Image (cartoon, rainbow, N blue to C red; front, side, top):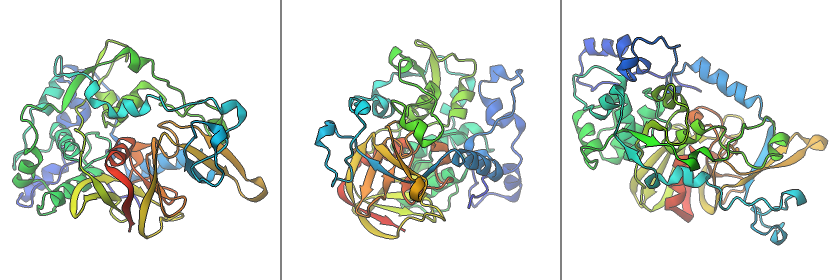
Length: 421
């Protein structure tokens, strides 16, 4: 069931009642859409909310609309062999492609590099808006008023500390609240889910004092030349395209910089997204570089907990199964890891059953990574809808954002323990 989402950061337990009242009455001048570049304050813009600030009804409607175009009744992630003639029908990760598709090769597809190669992207702090400067200069204090600049900074600090809040959007919703609780647990602090001085000190402890949250990035020719295509509706139509690519450059940049696309839009009004143009984006986290030998996927918390031995090293918002197709409970092992998986989609039942091979891409049903479990047909995987993580249903598997699942992929080995609760 979807939970109501607050628009603000919960105050420390020592806060007084008058401040609690301020929390629900954020001044209009402090809202995210109006804070972005105060030089635009005279412009009249249509109201918009970030994903984490949507009402339960709006999120439910969007998920229902999306699910209504999904005709898949069953499916399995598979790896396309580099040489189709070597396919082994006994291998669950092997399959035979139709003759006209055997030459498709996704080994050099730039999608993974677009998300992972953070160090290859040149960031600066030149020409930042007043709003971006306000975000970068924000410092938490016990008596401060709730504001969007501080919210973004806290979301970024959680991301940098590998307590992922999912897509960063300026809304203090359920994924951000969970991330704060998870961070407090990681650091041995009292897990109140509320900000206090000890939590702030821990958040900034290993972060350079001058590290900016928002930076400018100059779009390159390679960015512009990336394959983009509208994702078709229905499995048969999807099976006929060369790849399930990003639909546009904004979607690609959102995943690369861990941002909700609507927030990216707010930061970059009137941008054309052409080569040589600078855009404002989030300065994302450094690699985890921690061995993960056990993960726990908790359906009640909608969280994936990653451990190195007994040490909690990272947490990620996740979707774990659904009421109609619940994930199995128990302890399993990672048995295979696949980047850019194909998806074997089954449509219909009985005599009407059809199977379609959906090509790799960030808009593949399992995103850019599949990590299969010792329980056949179940695994950890990415998602084509990062803004829906912890909200939409998953067909029994554990779904993460594409950037979070890549971080798990980079640090977990085959044979690692997966506990589904």
